[in-house]
Length: 72
Image 1 (cartoon, rainbow, N blue to C red):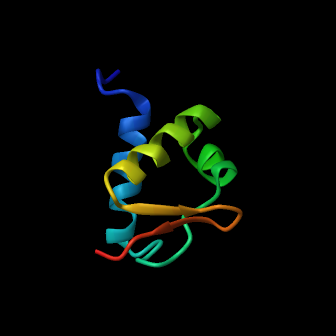
Image 2: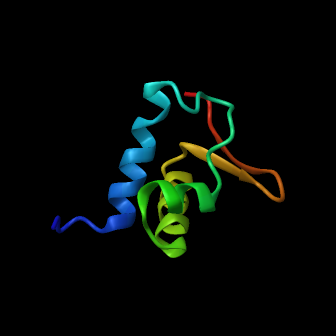
């Protein structure tokens, strides 16, 4: 029961993932469906989290190719 919005919490978790070795810079981020299933959240939450990561400059989304972790 955190006052921090769920999508921000998810973005923070995803930010820590590359530090844990999955996925590394240049690699594809898991799909929306995979993230929804893994974290048990709604599609809108995943989309908002990925949008926040894009705003932070941590990922880049290529149309019809997916979302990739940016080089540090």
